[in-house]
Image 1 (cartoon, helix red, strand yellow):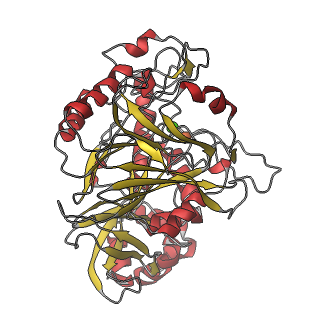
Image 2: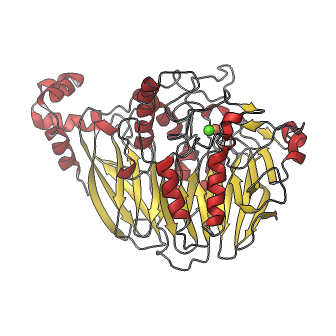
Length: 529
Ligand code: FE
Ligand code: CA
């Protein structure tokens, strides 16, 4: 493990002469002190406060390893508060929460280029096992995280439990759903995006309970970093990360509302929007337990990837934002948008689509799970028979949806389960080759998670839903309350419990099961349990 002296020796050694002078200037009297004294004095100034202010996380489990994440930030809301220097961070991973049997230790470098975040790709672990990990920097020790490796490749697995969640608007309420996820000790958690929201502070300053975004709308790297820091200061969010590995994909609000490829909704020149997306993606990478393969290059980032859990679950994570064609017909809900039917329109982009379609013909697991952002199922908002559809979802990319569903049939992909979020309501839907025809072939089931907080408390009754229910016979479950989905996969069934939070405007509110859907392997479609 990194000892304190070595830590500061090396931290100082890596400072250039100019940086050293700058630091000693900041320290006042220390500037005149001999190096040894300076070294001692630096111990506190480097970490004027606890550096592990955003907790710890793990992610993207493999059979032999997992990514461990933390970020040093003694002043999290104000750029992090670290000196412009490289700092040693020690890590250790153990069999037990008390660290009696430590299996591996190491030291990595937290660099200012990545806001002193670290991403350790641990290898050499056993498959399908629980582990505990923590970090050290200087004299400080991080919180302890629990994680779990994936089962052995191809092995029979009796049961996997995973959560599906997303859309945590800090101003809209308390992250009780994440606290509940923390208490369930899942095998893994799929986060479908909208981890942060990019808008300016909008809360009511007279309401002491109301949580407010700090700062204005996010544009620069510093803006995005501070916003992640604010969200990550939430104890419920930290607890969720410390409880299980997260498998994360960003949606639109990690960058800008409803963006599509190189275009936002404001008509910003694409070459300028690319600068904003580059800043947003870098901050996302810095804040998430992602592998180095996801390190952004300019305004692009490799988000789509595949993870396997024995012979039970084959999970492809998709990116439906970065490569999609521009929004048509002005976004929102539209009647009659012939452009949405253009066969040239793609939501995945040709490269990712080919990658996915190749995967879909090569699944050897019982359940094929597609983790992605926006609903693929059609939602007809028109009670008049004409139809109004969501232009920001797969509804705005009809040909791409038809290609995906046809591919699932043609490749005989086993038991497809599509995950989505983004719309701040729970849905379960049978996926139809032709949603206008209830007798059309069912290609799989979609589970859409409501929000962790976005849109506030919600209610059991939704007038829009009640009015359009008859036009959407493929939708088998709906709730307009906040929450997450707890999935239990076995070789015979996949069960989705739709968890509901009574209220998010107050902390510590009860969580209950609002409804459940069961999908039987080999039988298309889900039934409400
Ligand atoms: Fe959202
Ligand atoms: Ca979204």
